[in-house]
Length: 54
Image (cartoon, rainbow, N blue to C red; front, side, top):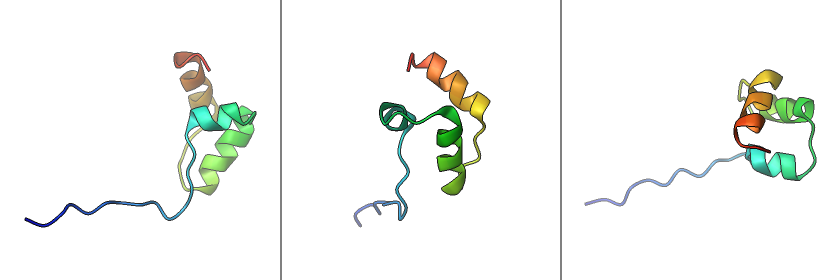
């Protein structure tokens, strides 16, 4: 049986907790994700931050 393929991202994509810990604002976080091709809005980031108490 062949080993499963391990997917390694070619571009760095940081998690929300990491970006908040770095002191990024919601706008900066949204811009970061948009640059990486992840469609996200500031309201989504705000909602997740409230859900996770960040």
